[in-house]
Each structure stands twice: as structure tokens, then as C-alpha cells.
Length: 604
Image 1 (cartoon, rainbow, N blue to C red):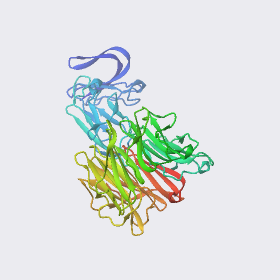
Image 2: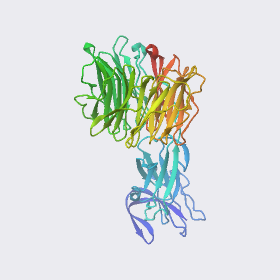
Image 3: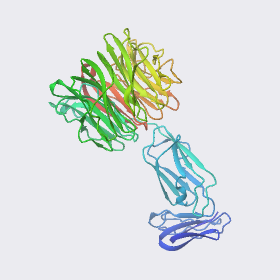
Image 4: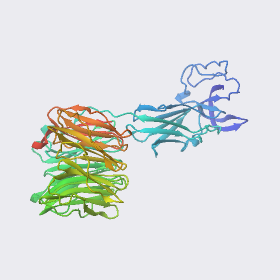
């Protein structure tokens, strides 16, 4: 093959006698003419700002020996040939690993292509799902820029169709495929999340689990005094990818105390935050504020209706369909579960929804929704010494209903039952877990069979489950539960997997088994959309974690996240769809009703 590189103007192309020709003149350009293998010799070329052309070799090639290879003004050369185009290189390389999640894909061809033929001909997929990209073509290179950050540990496949043609209409001789895998995440240093303690103490109640969207942005929410003598208010703080933690924003506006916030965010970045708020007459209200299309609503809105003295257990969900849900429990002689919801940017319903029966005491509620907007709620209700695990379903057409007791849990008098959690699967089913005396109990729901009898999720693990919140997450039709459990005098972090219709016979010990995990801390756990998980806990003065690689169904050995002074106690964890995670850790003693500071770290 021989080629020459010529600098001149052109405005149109036509095919003449088996070769491309240019006519007219609109602007200066650079054309590199590549002849067939049986072609003649190429001449010297002057490549734009090049100071001299390259001499022809005996094989008939001519290359510029200096200056800009892209021609005058830095424009890349147009390369033409009567041979079929080929792919010269691709970046990232085929089967490359540890690729940065912010990478671009660059494909270099042997010549300039007909850009119209590229439409739909270069596709990047993650599994069976096509990934949104922007394609640009210049000279001989196609560059694909991703619309969002790529997922950690995910494998992407680049497919180029043989329908791609050059300027002469010659097509690639065959389809092309290449793949690469994104690197593992790493922890950044922790920052102080809460406002300076001189501005007021952090509320003694729980702070919200951090939540994330598909782009890797995070939201952390907590209650803290507004000034040394001010009321406790709800604060929110965003982590923006590439920009770090943003300034704290005051979400509540009341002059009465606010506490116990809950937050939820969907993959698109819409979020809802709700909390308990004191009012005159010793009443407690439920207020909520949404973050929609990149902005907070102007003011928080009350979502409960009845005047009650005791509201607690506020929990939230922002579904993938854009609906915001808030559930809570309240006291009015007995205790009940109620809720409210708003569709998209619409208003909250004028009246809240009564969901549960009446109980002397309640644990929960917890809620979970699938990608279609259908959901589940679970709570534990007690009357006298007997307790019952109750569940409800939310259908988009009819709302909350289908309330029933889980078989085997009704009327339990000899076992403590509490701290429920629930997760929805991809097929319209769900799993509920809860503390049942010294064990983690569970029940599985499918559309075909309803709620199952109780199965123990902690398998053959010895010891006593800590009386604190287990965490549950789903992937496909499988589930993972994470909890704290004492073995002798040591409390440890455990996990188990539900797959093939059953829990593992022996759960996995995640912590080292020697230093106690802080027993009063809520377990921190989450999964991304590839079933890669993070379990985080406090152990001594350290925040530690274990990593689950979903493709291998294997946990890593536990490792250090951060050492914190001032008695770290809780580490609450949120994992986004892309694998980016956020941890909010506290110092102080929640058992003695105080937090000193809140700290936050990002895994990305």
C-alpha cells in the first residue's frame, strides 16, 4: 500500500474511475491519500504547519517529518483509500482491567469514514443494556464519551458493526468487539460532615443512612442544633462527584425541635427527606421536603393529618418511577402505621393513609419498592406479651393493602421480635427479616406462593444476635442480610446469602473475631446493581469494611476504612447503583444519647 499526504481545499467528493476526487474550494484542509496495495508511489506532502514533507521511501510511502500531523490549525487529516477500512487500535485495549470509571473510548480506523454510516453502528453495552454515549469523529478517530460515570467492577463491551463504511463506500470486512473492566473503588479520607459543635450539638437520635444516585452523587442528612441555644433542625449536605462535599443546607424551617430524619434517592438523583417535628400542644408532626430536577422544594410540607402526641419511625422511599413515599407510626390510645405519597412533582395526598391494625407497641415500619413502583412494608406489632410480624403491599393502581401476618410469627409470646427490614426483588417479590430472640428470622414473598413460613437467616451461627437493626438488600431474586451477633463476650459482624430458595447453612464472619464490634451500632450495608456489596462497622477506634464481589459471590477479608478519635460508634452506609458508596460515622455514645461529630467518607 502507498499513500501521500496533500494539503488543499475541497467542498465536495465524487467517485471517478476507481478513485476519490475533490472539487471546489471552501476552506483549507488536509487529505492523506492512501492507494491500494498495487498503487504507485506517493509524493512529498506538506502537512499544514509542517515545515517540510517526508521523503518517499522505496515502498512508496510519504510522511511529514515535522510540524503538526493534524494539518493547518490543528485539524486532523482526512485519510482516503480504496481498500476496506480496518480498526488500527482501541482504547481502552481489549480485556483491559482497572480502567478508570471516567474513561472515554477511542477507536482509530485506518482511514476516514463516512460519518453517516456510524449512526447506530458503534454500540457499548454493559451486559445486555446499551450504555448512553456521545459519538464524535475527527480524522480517523471515533471518540465515545459516556453520559455518566461508569460502574465500579463492571465489564463493558464495545461493538462495531460491519456496516461502517469509508468515504468510498467500502465496509469493514467483519464486526468488531472489544471489552474492558472498570477498576475497584477506593476510600477517600473522611471529612467532618456536621456543623462545628460550637454551633450546637448533633441530635442524640439516629442520623439518616446516606443515599446515592447512579452518577455517584450522595446526600447525607442529620439533625443538629441551629446555634448553641437554637432548636434542633434538619440539615442536608450533598457530595458532588468531582467537586466534593458541598455546604450544608437547612432543610427544616420550624423553630420547634426536629429529629429522626430519613432520606431516600433514586438513580436519577431525585430525593425525599422526612422527619419528626414538634408542634404546639405537645403534638408531633411529620414533615417532608423533596429534591426534584436538581433543586429543593421551596419549603418543607406537612404530610400527616391527624393531631397526635407521639410520632416515630419515620421512613422514606423515592421510587425509580419518581414517586415519594413516607410512612411512620403514631400513638392515639394505641399505636398505628400510616403513610402518604406524592407522584412525580405532584402534591402530597390531602389525607394520610391508615395502614396497620392497632397495637400496644410497634417496631418499624420499613419499606421497599421495586423498579416498577410497587412496594412492601413490614412492622412488628405487640399486644400485651404477644407480638406479630405484619406486612403490606403497595400497588400503583390501588395503594396500600393486602395486609397480613407472617405465618409462625403471630402471637409469639416466648421470643422477642423487633427491628424488621424488607427488600423488594426484580420479579415482584420481597424478603422480610427481623430479630427473633437470638436469631435473624425471615419470610419470602412471591406472587405465586405469598409469604412463606419463617426461615432462620443466620443458619447455624452460634451466639446471640444483637438487639439492633439487621440490613437487607436484594439482587435479582437473591438476598443478602448483614447483622451483628455476639459470640461469647465478643460481638462480630456477620452476613448470609439467600440463593436458590434457601439461606446458606453457615453465615460468614466478616469481622476479625477478636476485637468487639460496637454492639449498639446499626449495621451498615448496601449493594449496587451488579450485586457488589459493602458491609461497614465500627470496631474499637476504627471504621472497617468487607467487600462483596458480586460476580464471584465472595467476600474480601475485612480492612480499615478510617481510624477516628473520640469513640466512634456508628457507621451508616449507602451504596449507589454504580458502586460508589458513602459512609457517615459518628463519635460519642448513642446509648447515652449523645453524638459529638459526624464524619463522612466516599468509596469511589
